[in-house]
Image (cartoon, rainbow, N blue to C red; front, side, top):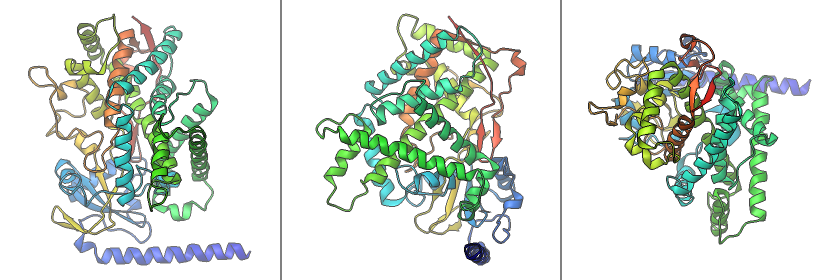
Length: 492
């Protein structure tokens, strides 16, 4: 009874503080970008469709302009919509907007550590080290290219064994892409039927799905209370600990066989750097090693596999596009050698198709939230230090100023009048500024090699009529997901 009473008092005290904070925030609203009036504690919850927050944000943009303020529960967030606002913040004021915003689902796992979800000096040191180390292990060079080719060859063998039967490509692509980053981080790959590997992929998938769900959005807004309540968030909390324990075990394995003069992988390099800085106050410690390795493994698995899975669906829906890619592969590469990444400069149509798949899919229109690290102004509005900022990168992908008929899938969006690849400033699938994705080089190489190597060996077939293909991503929260489908890989 005493424990229940204390919990009730704590909850009431928390709610009271949140109400007072909300009242105070409303007093200073005149200095901030405009936006809908928030209610105490719940903020603008009643004005948002938790099943499709992206569409709600678009509607608010139409009412308030490219820079506006919303309240997600007790959290005040400044939203940036459109190319000009995003460029002014993330490029022109890159330092001011270099902090990392809150995402409760992922903060439950990473806790502010690691290269992706940290801020300040920690983020700068870990990012600098990670970029240099990945470059040492061949990021963007022949070493990583060979690893990708070897992994795709394993996938091709598995697809050949399906003998053209309809399959869901989700797990197949996920295993392949995950093994590429595993070879860099751990120095080894998983067998496709490894139970631990399959369990890890399932937990990461569940975490992404929860973060996008309405319950996940509520957890994001009210995690300080919900983390103590029963519900699906408790499974996410348990899975977060399992993922952390897995990575701790991997680090210990590496440490037991470490040769300081011959690093085998990313973990080895971090361990060696830890030894060099063990007597100073450094960000190179065990927690940052575990969480940086985990964030690389996490990020290196989902994005590329989802993009390709959606790409296959779009190519089946638009067989004329698939035919043109096959023709370019035959003309530039032929059938007697496997594709190499250097081929992409001679294959503008294939590259345009990949870019258009990324643009059209628009899986993560929010990206990863930012936070201001100092007081600043944006579009003439005051944005105080510590303000969470949502740069809506998805708004760039549907801007008719840059893409004609953005609701249609059309690779010509990325080709000039001569059929050559053209640059479009609004095409920022990996974000921009000081916190952009530093794995973009690896992702671009994977997308090109996976698509061309698979199409060199197969044609795609949809089990029923092409008009039955639903090519519209399903909106969930701040994300969009690929419709589920099956397909056949027909050997050429």
